[in-house]
Length: 205
Image 1 (cartoon, rainbow, N blue to C red):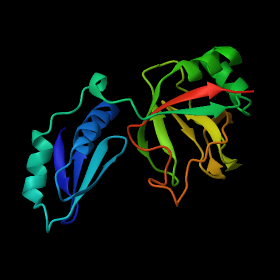
Image 2 (image 1 turned 60 degrees about the vertical axis):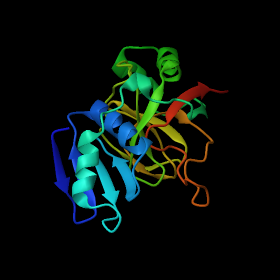
Image 3 (image 1 turned 180 degrees about the vertical axis):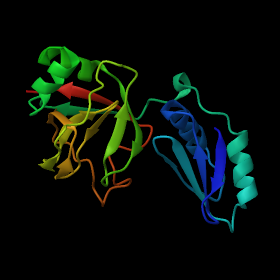
Image 4 (image 1 turned 30 degrees about the vertical axis):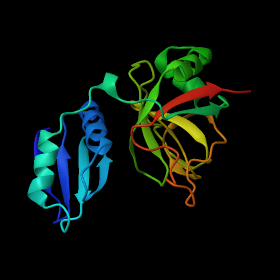
């Protein structure tokens, strides 16, 4: 944690050294927040803490943040694990295999063998950016994005995997598709993929 920045009078933005630091800090701050904390939102290199200044003054929020030690990766609770069934017949599977110097079967095996965690959300409601400790599945985005990617598409880009919650433009490399519903505005929470959640992908015919 390098710096805290006030965002208006009801939020604090915390700079982190890297994504691992974001995950550790988010896990610690969201575990048992004091009364007055409204939300803890991770991003690629920052964590945003919003609060109600009528309940919790800004200086006490800053003190709480600074006194809360990050949660080591091994100490995170993985009980809320989600399995997504995927048909691995994506348009970019062969290209991903070529980029990684693997066979298509090896790409699928690596994707399903990896334990993924939702690092942060964005781009579209219900879209989670998932990361894993495996370095084998890092690929660039497509040089030419598609104007429409079908809902349920499971894809790779950089160090992340993600699932498109609805049809939208996108430049990620598509590995396959899932029938899982990623966003339901009537559910609590509406997003299936929430920060910190552990995800495994399972191949189905």
